[in-house]
Image 1 (cartoon, rainbow, N blue to C red):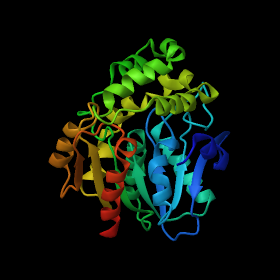
Image 2 (image 1 turned 90 degrees about the vertical axis):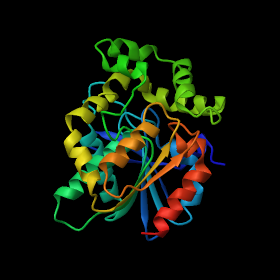
Image 3 (image 1 turned 180 degrees about the horizontal axis):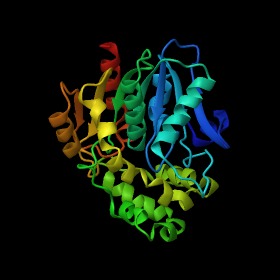
Image 4 (image 1 turned 30 degrees about the vertical axis):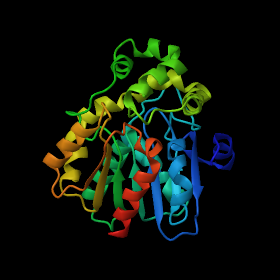
Length: 289
């Protein structure tokens, strides 16, 4: 099993503007590339349970977004989804990737939506070959943020951020995971160590602004999902109170010919709660491309 220390030591950095961005890469000799985009408030480490099996078939690339994980976390920066998408494109350009598949979760879903919007606007050959989305706020009208997220977004957020703790993380993760797929103490420790790296809790109130952006750019980010230029599968932990079964219902209402796989009893982090089942749904999707 992958260990967090090994994940860090085997990772790499690239320069994005003035900042160092951490990323993991595996099996660069494989002909097909899969880019994995993590959620808030965690990092590329979220993909650890899928990593080794996916690497048997795909060239894997998984960045820590700016402000997350082992990447730089500037305290005077306007964290915008469009710039995180720029980061992904810059990373792929630096390693010579021109076509790729996407697997995204939560915050990463929103970055994937921005990348898809760019594809829809361009007349150039498609870079994105397919997309798998896990639980995330695809539609701002169905997103149900936790109270702590609302507080971070409020005027008191910048004073609250430095006082967030491991216990804060545990209390909130216990509520968004499935009742029988709760995170272990070790997982909480690992996530918290990644958040604290380079003082990451100090920028929570800046990172959380993506929720406002979802409302601001709803039309841009939702419209390409109606009839996407590539095949899209949605895999949803149904028990997630933030973006679970209720979000999947909205997706079914809006998207033409929706491909939805529901995971009963699973919460907001299906890739760590039920990785084998997520992999099964990924493989059947890719086999039918």
